[in-house]
Image 1 (cartoon, rainbow, N blue to C red):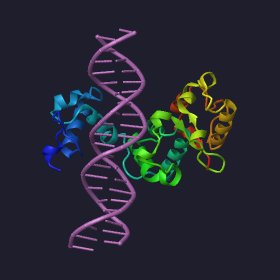
Image 2 (image 1 turned 60 degrees about the vertical axis):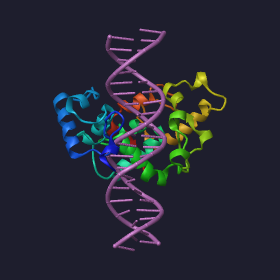
Image 3 (image 1 turned 45 degrees about the vertical axis):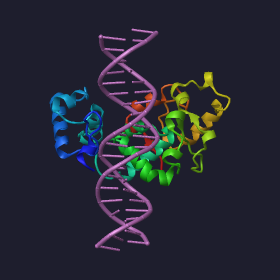
Image 4 (image 1 turned 90 degrees about the horizontal axis):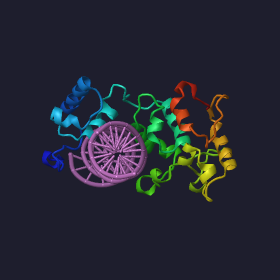
Length: 216
DNA sequence: AATTACACCAACCGCTTCAAG
DNA sequence: GCTTGAAGCGGTTGGTGTAAT
């Protein structure tokens, strides 16, 4: 592609980053730290928008980002977290040390989805941002269908009891479903959680990864 | 050797959320 | 309460490498 074609309307370059651009961005962050991404093009002269700079840092340049193939343990963790959380890539990535949401998402869509997940991809798939559904497997490993999935927002806020749609699952049914997925996730006995527990996500956020023991 | 098909992954886009003024 | 900009998120696109034909 010609360089001129890479220039967007506002003079910002698009496409792959060069080593020189990486160096400029890394040096800026080393000196000024993260944040104020929109300042970077003005200060450094980089012909990239702030959003692009942020993404390049978070997904590639940051020292905390782990490069290379996913290990079997990482894959296993992603599969199980995806069963529990659905397409909440940032939440999943937050529990896979060194991996970004983009890495996890790409890895899922290109490798794991074929083996373990819904075969539908791209436009065929129902947008998770619309439904926020979490997919749960039954005892045989079957992924429950659309009509059997639970509203993730209700799960998150524990609002099901008050605002339950006629089409949604009852608390009893939901607890039963949770039992299925909970069999593989050993939560300490002092945590009494179910799918409608307020703060489940916060629990997962705060709980040390090493203490989340997954059964094989 | 040339072409085609496919897999992978970096990056973009549009939308939402949040905080500051 | 409203506006605005920054940051974050998830879906999607497009470039590149490679295997298959």
